[in-house]
Image 1 (cartoon, rainbow, N blue to C red):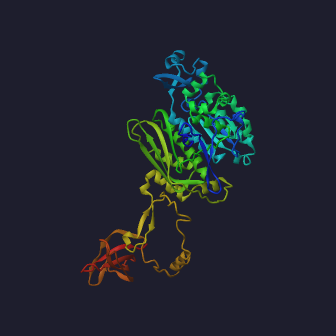
Image 2 (spheres, rainbow, N blue to C red; image 1 turned 180 degrees about the vertical axis):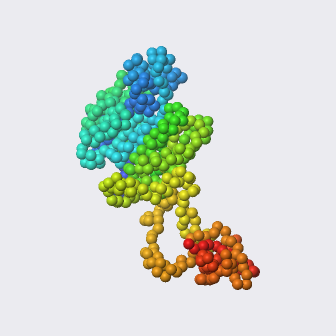
Image 3 (cartoon, one colour; image 1 turned 60 degrees about the vertical axis):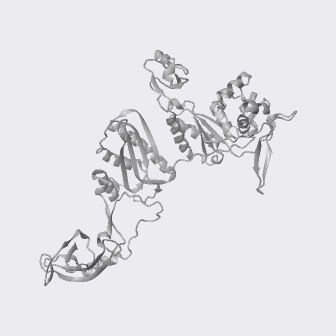
Length: 554
């Protein structure tokens, strides 16, 4: 969107100025001459050297393409001064005599089966943003000019795409493949490219000196000026840009506003025309509005797949992936139904996410038909992949397709995310707090770089020592009771299916004094007559010092 224009002159006798900052940081004000000097043509004033080249894309029937198709007779209407009139009609409707400015009643009289849709400005704006994001593959600077124009700065992209003709052809073919009719024009200034594209002139102007001749024949309706200004100029016999340029500059600015004169100068390259580039949001967010309420599962899944295709395109352009996504199904009479999906490793593949969606969608109970679907993605992560052996036989392909991560994801989709988790250690001496559940689909912190954990390089030697000596090098069991069990005790010591024989210990744990769950225990490894190794402790915080069973060794 263009930056708001600043009023050029506040006082009647004050000429507008253009501020230029020199290299020595001194600001100099140059007068913008409104009145032409005697005997000098206004169009011959010096032109600022330009290094930009703008490709303007105008979507003349965007209101129609945003809401209806091109099969059955259909038209888009909007309310004008309290009367609903036809704005645009497709080919089938025009063949039946439907034309713009017809009232709805007149249109229905000509074609009773005519499909009528009200203009949807929100959807048009959404399409423009989607096309602006799509155009990022051709340029790094895209400008949205509502309601139906896109501007692409392509001077830096010509060498990459093999010249201006090849680049223009790729852009036009890309728009046509998406079902859009577009007028494309190329000019050195953004306003000139906009006006030429609106006029439907397929021209390519590279030299700013040729702008006056090319823009002069354009009608004033291409300038998108207020109707009052256009009608006033038409009453004076001025209908083209060339005729407007021949008017006295001071009188033109005084009667029609300095902003109109400024627009003409910017279009001809006499003044800079700064623009703000469109940038797509950092996180993916997309909506899909249905024409009517739907409860067909196949249709809803197809819509979800289309949203996943948009997500993949979004992530592919950034070389990123996501670990969590959420679908929201909106209803007219109920609150939205939400469906979250997560994967162990961040991914962007459509089929991967769609497989998980199908599993969860079978168990989803929708309280009412759906009128709209929204897809929101989690925090982007760097996309990483691994090189694997190519499958040269069907057996190799089947063996390579399965993995523990995909198994965990499918189990989570079937039985719930809370039912599938791993265990991770915590820096805490108290056994009940020394571990916690780790859900495989939890997002990796955005600032984390490198692997989430590193393998212990001494682990193989440690396991070999355990096998060789058959000793309990690890003093903590993997099977820990949720609550310690009180053991029977006599003069011979603690008992568990017979008297216990202490094998190792004590390991004294005395910590947690700063909160209400402090402990003072002596842990031992003991074995009972059946050969079961147990992890027991003696509670030193009690006067009687009872014995408790806290775990068992496998």
